[in-house]
Image 1: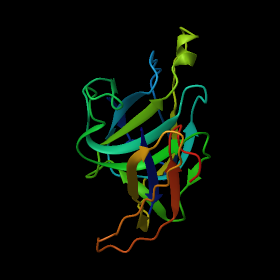
Image 2: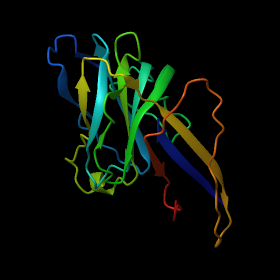
Image 3: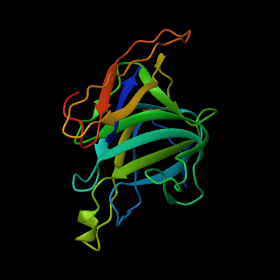
Image 4: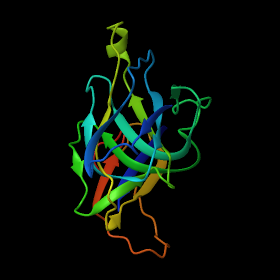
Length: 218
């Protein structure tokens, strides 16, 4: 039997000092600091402290190497999952967590997906009295590109469109995940659903689906 997992994302430790930025709008590159891996299915994390007042993310432009980058997730964390500059953060029971304490998923990207711009007057807040750290998790599914090029290093990440002025609407992520088993030489259909019980009124604006090698149609 194959273990199976589908996830659906619904959009509803260096220091970065943003307090000196005077422009109302600016771009910020948040990228891996040149990393390598020698094994398949490696998950690596890198975090930066957002020092200063609250900033608001309004757009995401992926920067990636299609040879090595399978997917990337951007987290907002109270504390990073490790004191290391770069740490193993998934795919291994002995790996460190992405974050310590409370956290939120801000954005996810996979498999050559395009850039994404938030609807007008909508943003993800970061810094200030909120989540103080940005943490980037990258999944390196196939390590052969690193194994074949000893000098190769990865600097995948995002160019974030940001602004210092608050927006009328704040965005968030609602994550759906299911797992199950697939019989050998068979087909299995899995459904993902969740009943929302919160009091806030939600307005879905986008969704993204993701599966690994056994996913054929979503």
